[in-house]
Image (cartoon, rainbow, N blue to C red; front, side):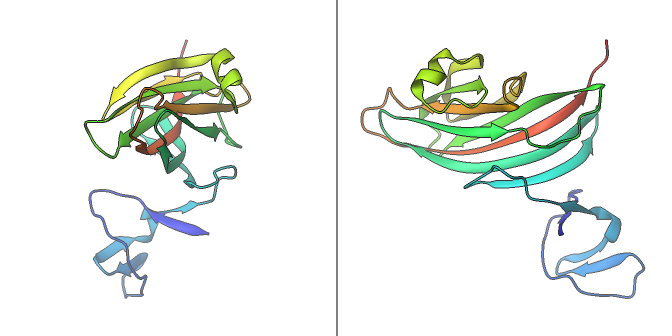
Length: 186
């Protein structure tokens, strides 16, 4: 089992040692309570990316189910995509799942077209006919937001970055997505 330190403004990682305080472990940058550690487990289906399952509770009635991060280079005149699967998560009857997304282009002055499609869309034909959360949003430098309904088809979605308007420059994208369970009421 891997362990992740809950962040509360103090950063740091380091070797775990022992000390005399009850329930405390020593890190290179100081002391912390053992209750500030939460278990992580790997999420399947996330090849080439960093993925972990972290069911932590946030304020405002939301719970982060998992976070995935990766990077992607989209060649000039090309389209790049990543498939995101919801996976096996526990959703309560009073919760709905939202996809929280954020990405940055390596150079701030660059732009790209970004879409979130419902389901796994492996080729251009499927991408053109897919139901979309939104399609061809023009983004300069980077962007972020929340979208509901992304996992309505096949419990998955496809992130698409189009660099078709560029004839010469490839674009490097660093992205992070989170599945967030949000409490809702009638």
